[in-house]
Structure formats: C-alpha cells, structure tokens
Length: 593
Image (tube, rainbow, N blue to C red; front, side):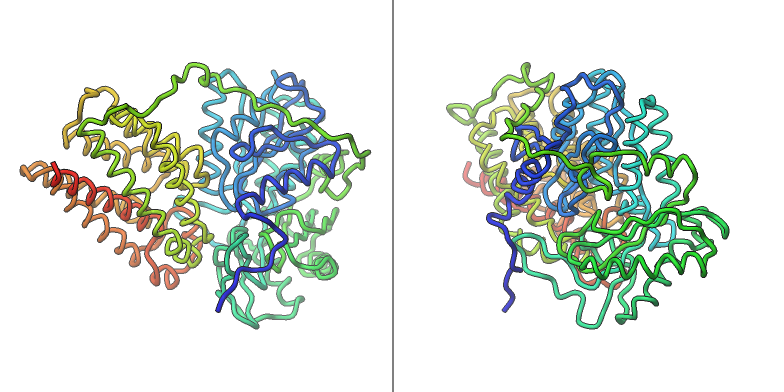
C-alpha cells in the first residue's frame, strides 16, 4: 500500500505562501506583495513602488525549484520573482502585479525559462504591461543539452543555467545600463550556457505519493526540473563515468549548444536537485574541473557549487557550462545582496514587516460587478446544468488525470484542472447565466484566477476567444451554429498562441474532431442537442487516439514514444470529459423541456 511521502508541511495547498512567509522573515532585503494566495510575488524591500531608477529584472515560474526564483531577489540580481504554484506557471495577474510594483521609467526585463506555460503567461503579461505604457523586454532561456534538436515547437528546456543569466542581467541593470543593453547582455549569456541533469530518484509533489518510475539501481539522464522522464534510464554508474558523459553531451560539437573549442575559458555550475548532500555535490565539482581541463582542454575560471535550481526533493545533480569572457566574469563577480547567490551579503534582522499592497489593475475600477439573475430563463437553466456537469466531471477525473500525467508530464494535470473546476462551481452563483456571452467571459475569469500553469492560460485563452465571438450577438439567446462558431474561434485561438494543431497530442485532439462532427450534424439538420451529444463521442474517441501520437507540444515532447503509448494525453482526456458531460446535461435539459 502506497502512502504520501513524509513532508514537513501542513496543507499542501499553502506550501508556496508559507515558504514566502519564512523567506521574508529570514532575509531583511526581501518583501512580498499582499495578494496571497493568488498573487505570490517576492520583491526587493528597498525598491520604491513604480519609481525605481534602474532597469527592473524580473523572473519567475512554478515553485518547487527553490531557491529559484525568490532566493535570487536582491540588489545586483533579480528585482522581483513571480511564484506560481508547485510546478505551475504563475498566472498573468501575478506577473502584471510584479511588473507594476517594481518597474520605473527605465523599464523591465523578463527572464523566462523555456516552458510553454511560462512563455504564454509571461508573454501575455508583457503585452498587457506594454499596453499600459511600461517598457518591457523578454529573454527566453533554453539551456537544456540532453536532447538533440529539433524538439517540435517546444524547444530546449530552461534549466539551472538560467541562474547565471539572472546574475549577468542583474549586474548589468545595477550598473545603470539601458533596457536594450541589459536585454542584449542577458540574451548573449543565455546563448553561451548549456545544462544537463542526472537523477537518482524522482521528486514527490506535496501531498502526493512518490512515483516508483525509477527503480533501484537505476538513474535517469537528461531529465527536466518538473519530474518529467529524462532522455534515458541507465544502470547506476560510478560518479566519474556519469560526469564524463554529462560533460561530453553539454560540449558536443554535433549539437554545438555551447559554442566553445579547446583552449577556451568556462564557468562551471554544479547544481543539486533537492536532496543531494553537499558532500556529493562537492565530489562532482572536484571531479568535473580536472575533466574539463584535461579531457576538453578548457580553463575553468569560476566554480559555483550548491543547490540553485532544484526539483523539490529529487536526488541528483545538473552541470551547467557557460563560455567565459571578461565581461561575463565581471558581471558574475559584481556585488549582489541576493541571499542564495554564493557571495550574498548578510544583513540585520528587521522588525516585523507590513506587506506591500498589490498595485491595482487599470481595468479593475471599470469592471462592473455581475450577479446571478433572480430568475433563470430556459437558456440560463441549460447553461447552469451544462457548466455544473462539466466541472463535476473534471473533479471526478482528478486522480486519473494525475496518474496519466505522472507518466508523461509532471503529475499535476488533475490537480490543476480540479482547481479550475472548483473555482467555477464556487463562482457560478454570481454568473449572469441569462447572458451566455458574459457567462463564458466569467468562466474564463474564474479559470484565470484559480488554475495557473499551462492549462490555466490555455483555457483562459479558450474562453476569451469564445466570448469575443459571442459578444456581438443577441443576449437573448444563441443559435446552435453560433455556439459552433464560438468553439471554432476558441480552437483557433488556442492553436495560434499555443502553437499546437491536430495530431500534436494535446486537448485539441479531442476538441477538433468534436467541432467537425458538430458542424457536420448541424449542417444536415440534426437536432442541436443530438448533434452536441454525437460530437462529444468524437471528442472521447479523439482523446483516446492520442495514445498513438508522438507529442509535439508541452512537456510530453521530452517523453519516449514507448511511454506515451501507454496512456492517453491527460489534457485531451480532460477536455473530452467536460465536453461529454456538458453534452449529456444539455440533452437531459432539452428532454425535460
């Protein structure tokens, strides 16, 4: 019988906010925005709100990688860190709050690890911030050297080398450079660094059971930082053999990920993945330096050893190699007060702090409060039944989704979708159900507030596109073909911004077949509720068919075809489930009437 791993936590839902509480109590130079639990932003306590006279350097992503990102906030490094839930990209509103809190006239640079959810959320936040008048630049870091190019639309993952990019950008900003120059230095640094990881165990998400994917006597090569499977599983080897293999992959002339030749100079970072003792990390560092010198003919100018970007409690390490030159070394050597950079400056413990208020959104004052009608019309009753059925279907599927996702992703698809479904059921009491377009808009708002991660931004885009399509029509009711057009618009928007299409092993492999059947049945004159029901069968079939597809988007792109063939895509199964439940509810409501 399996039991949840032993953790020093209370409620798993609160681990990130409680981590931030402890962090700011420990380090005098850190503060946070008073927006818990939705807004989890750590920032420099010495930066005046919206009046900072240097370029603000902002990064962030899912939590579980501590000390990244919040531990690198401080003068000379990051100005703010946006914390998502564990392994989930932070929502757009949190990123915007961070930008508004620390960005002054010099603008801000967003440093984003190359994961779909981070790119989408930070990208949308950047565009919104620009529309508000902020100067914003973005640098995407993809330093993974474990997998050969190309990797579909996903690209190379962002790993521990991102921390070195943080340091270079932070030092450039502290020196007073312009936004364009800080961004240029960060981009240049990102193109000079490569990383590869080795895991001895998998990680365990708070409140969940430890996976048995990696058996005794085995190690995983080239894994990501979210617990997703690596490039290969091999028998455990002596540390010298493992280090030689990792260095060879990073410095491969075939991939040329780190453009350097014999006689060059490098910076070495040895990074623990969460539960590797410092003794073992120092052993790795002590063996890696002479191998770089003797086997690869490289001079090692700097060595940083410790836990910089972890994967919760994973045992293992990653090695990052950055091509060094004088400007890079000057940036790395520059003073910083970021507490987890190896040369952080100590400070005195301050008195208890009052959290900084979250800056208001410019649109917040103009949003009119909405409420449930006193009496629902026929459309409102049908809409309510469909929404509740869809949300409950996701709640009931939570454990299955997590199980599937643990084999092909990071194991949290069910938990993420569950948060969105619970938020919808909580908020539906305030939905203007007699106005279908506005109800669709409110569903998107509920999801955007609660879900986070890639699924959260994808579904927010989905419902915003549907709302845009519907809002120009009559509020008194919509035809079945107008609903089909809204579904088509949503699919197109998700494909446009997410980069996926049919056959990529995503939720679109459930929704596209459903749309085609729905349009066909409506065109030949089928009853709308029957057409909806038949299209839901196509959604289920499409989701099941993902077992036979090779992933080309998201974290599943890093998983072997053999592993993928054992389970359907969790996102597609989730989409098919809520779509089917909604169709059944509509059919039942029509039967009653």
